[in-house]
Length: 392
Image 1 (spheres, rainbow, N blue to C red):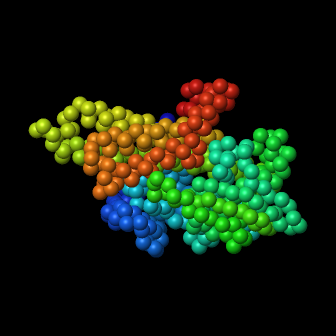
Image 2 (image 1 turned 135 degrees about the horizontal axis):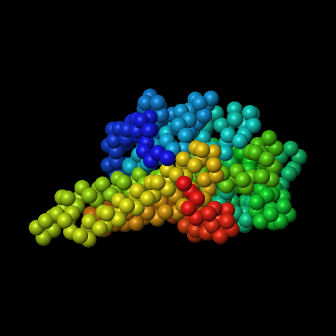
Image 3 (image 1 turned 60 degrees about the horizontal axis):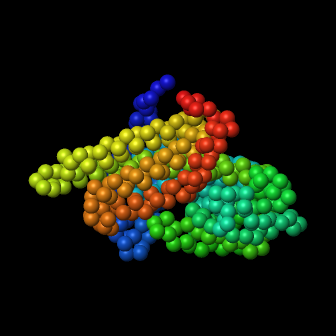
């Protein structure tokens, strides 16, 4: 058992940290100003420029297999990288990647969708959530009916990340209603790759944060048989794999953001003088800082354990739910304390704390709400799928 990063992992962490400090953090004031004035966070082309700079440093396709030109650093390194990148709110993601389930495509699909996505020539999104079926995937209503060599899709999806920008969507629809009902939603649904020019529409959904998801509408959208991703009627498993991968990543983002926020609180508490001395000397402030530091470390190890387990080829779904539940709630508690420590200034848009506050509230909702994670964790323990203390 080894609870320290290897020399290689430390080197990657240090390199990413320098990139964030040199290329991303200097853009924060510009991002805040753009968002206050209703403009996109980054000007057109800036993200691509940043991704190419990262590529020059060797960071392209962090988890993409080497055969597709990626670095294939593994899940532990993905967690470490995300913790560093999340220390800034500048919207950035490394290029050269594709959704994990897109690798389940056949060779023709890989040439048409996977490789162009990795190369940055196409953008994808994944759509399972519906207006009446969020975490309860058994309640999906979108249908796909076979007509000749095509499937005709009808229905709506909502809160789809990247849905407004995507060139194609990997969408889940019912292909066998009886099978879907008999298996409580676990079978009878299929994942289709649908190009935007096949006719589906997207509409921007305004939220309390700077995340703008999409509502997707499918009205007799015809998708050819060859665009089925994976197996017919087995799309639920692909959906679970996509969501499961995303869950512990939410925890990693929360750890990185909370670290940056806590450091802001520490720095401010040293400078802010009240009644003749820095507020850092006040017990009320010290306890908030101490509690935050402990919770960040706890969340970090939950995330790293979930990532390590996946690297070992083991089932990490239980750990991913724990990392997501604790990490997202930890992030909410830390940002609330940091805002409180900053007082009125923390509530203004001059500082990024209120922005992080709005973003952090979303962490407890997407990719499975708090309630869903608790249900999964408790069910696994009660049914004996996981035993208390077996996670080492």
